[in-house]
Image (tube, rainbow, N blue to C red; front, top):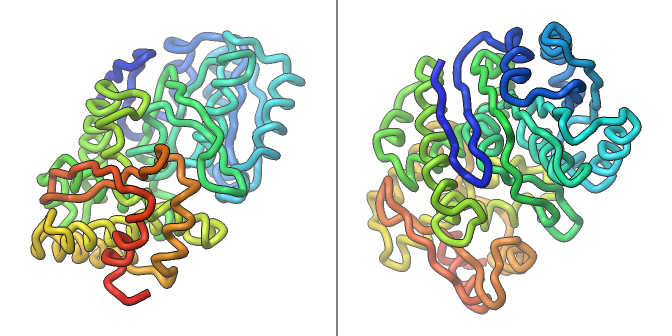
Length: 353
């Protein structure tokens, strides 16, 4: 096992290893305490790992209650959130009890948002079951739900008490869900770690613990410097400005990782057109996306994407933050005036729309 300590407004450990879900209860007892553990998970994950997690928590002395919701991004809404809050209240959880988010990014975001607001803050443990959640959303404290107007429009920064990353849980991922996580791994390589990017040129499943460790270490360092995304943490949004617009326009039929892949391609083409990166950088990024079957284009027009970007949380007054690569392993943040967003995206699309 490997442990990474995140020092933010709350200090906590991210433990990375394999085949330790049966021991999770004891690990949670040591770090979070409490009498009741509320497992928050979706119907798919519950069928796979719910009983193992529940038994582990019971063996550690917890009273265990389960909140199970329908899987998918469409559940990441106010209805699910308030249903969960009412469930926690009905089960009489106290602030010293613990909410256990067992699942992917949707589960972690909803459970984290509930933990941050229920009784003004309840203990939280993240157990990611997808590659995307393991390398990204389970660490760093971002929580939230989607509104009709856009993704993650309602949420908080709320650090967990513990993150347990059991890589053996990733073995049941469908190929598309696995590739969603690969998109985020590619992002980390581009923004900070050229060696990680090079590792991706060969199948990484045998090196998955090392890959996750490198990604989390990057995120740990960035979050420790800028927990509330006022500066350098915006680098983690590479591909996300356009990616979130694609998700919104598709009514979330395009998955997060696939939308971010397109976003990275669009933002890199734009960077190339602006002279920020060279043609080789662009081709390397497009090639790695293609290697993993990730899309690099979209049918949405520059106008449609730009309009969708106006509701993105990365908008700051009359500007929208966008991230552009200078080379593999180094990106820059640029504040793009709203009136220039459409031309920038148009350049990134590489077509006349």
